[in-house]
Image (cartoon, rainbow, N blue to C red; front, side):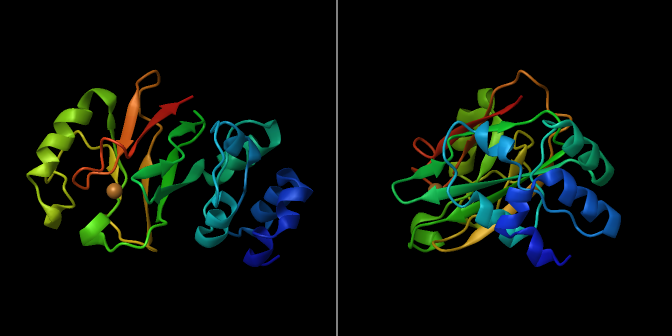
Length: 203
Ligand SMILES: [Cu+2]
């Protein structure tokens, strides 16, 4: 089986259990589009399947016993695409991270046309209680630091700042993030954060 096969429609329709097992057998890089992960977002996520195709990353939850067993063999690497849209909007605006996820890869896709200097987007994750202070300090950090204070320990994860048509990603450990804590993500570009904001929870 080639890696291309993993991103085909067949992969989704045939079911993950069989294909995941095959991947394990062949030792190939596993790709799994887990529909439960999409469903728990509560909002349509355009481009999620495409994102999996492009990145080859695995989106997997513990839901479905057999899938979970395979995921443990290869590590629970979860993945989500987030669009930064014109009009200072993120989509989705809430990310539910299954508690089985060990790492989360967020791929940020800037769907606008403006360059980074005019309307850049990034994805910055902090605890909800740290949002205002992180944004305020970021505004004095300037564009060379992507409008985030250097070495800001309140930042749990962040992507690079990108311009229209670009994409970037960040992978970080979610296994030690306390459950029951409210997390917020935002874009630190000046005047974007008030609108470009979303919430993340470990569920
Ligand atoms: Cu932005």
